[in-house]
Image (cartoon, rainbow, N blue to C red; front, side):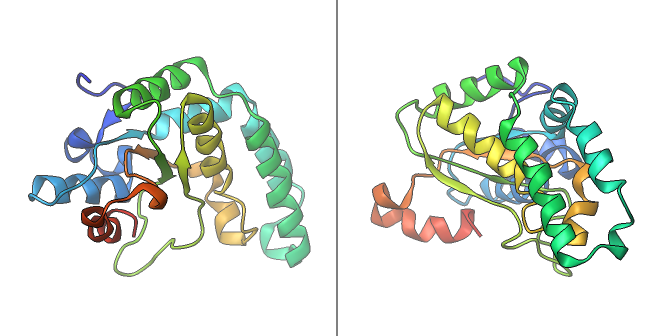
Length: 202
């Protein structure tokens, strides 16, 4: 795989790209790799991919409509939940843009089209000492092949609003990079990778 592009950044190049483009989790993994720790090969779909997906599927208009009904602070919990799930449904039904699909295919082909892959979030500002997004966003482990990985990317993006909290809805317009990495699913991990899993999946 050559050097990174606007749509796909190898994990080995994430440090040079910075947290604003690849998110905190991908950046921490890249830093661990540079420090000599064993980190699986992987790629990052940067914020530009999310923004293109939102724009081409007109999800920005749907989000604006849903969040403009009334101030979030005045919504009852069931209204927040319903709003989140209407937006989530739009994400899950969306079509991944061609340029992003090509980038994901490159990642899958490089890592192995028959290999079990993990797709997970890597938001800017995620999991710092003073805050954590733990449990807020979905991770999909065990996807095989381009179609399954594209579905997993949509699921991760949709999980920006899945928990229905005012805070998660307020982050919708900020964008979130998604990492596609080559860490094996639990069913096929050998003993050496169990220790590695604790580092790479936290």
